[in-house]
Image (tube, rainbow, N blue to C red; front, side, top):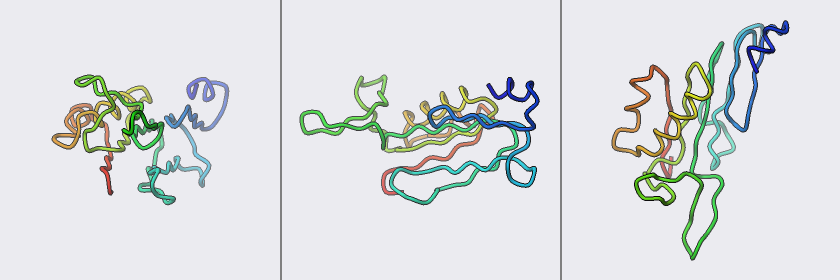
Length: 136
C-alpha cells in the first residue's frame, strides 16, 4: 500500500493496519521522517518514540485481547509448545525492520521466546526490538 501511494505521487505515506505500520518518504514533521509512539497498555505515556524514515514497526502483547476461563486469565498469543496462552515472562515486544510482516513475525517469536534469550532471532535479522516484562 505504501509503495502504491508513493507511485501515485505522494511524497510520503504511513499505513497503519491494526497496530502494525509501514512508512516511507517524507513525514509530516518538517519534511523529516515519521515518529512512532510505542505504547504500553498499562501506561498512558509512550514507553518509546521511534524515528522512522522508511521501514515498519509492529508490536505484539499479551496485555490486550484477554479473557477469563475457569478462573484463569487467557490471551490470544498461543505458545506452540504448550497449546495454551503463552506465559514466558515477556508481555510486550516491538520490532522495527524494513517490512511490516518481518516485524510482526519477529515480535511474536520474540515474545514467545521469553526472557532467556529474547533477542536471539532479532539479532540475526538485523532488526531492532524493545521488550517489556510484567511490572516494567
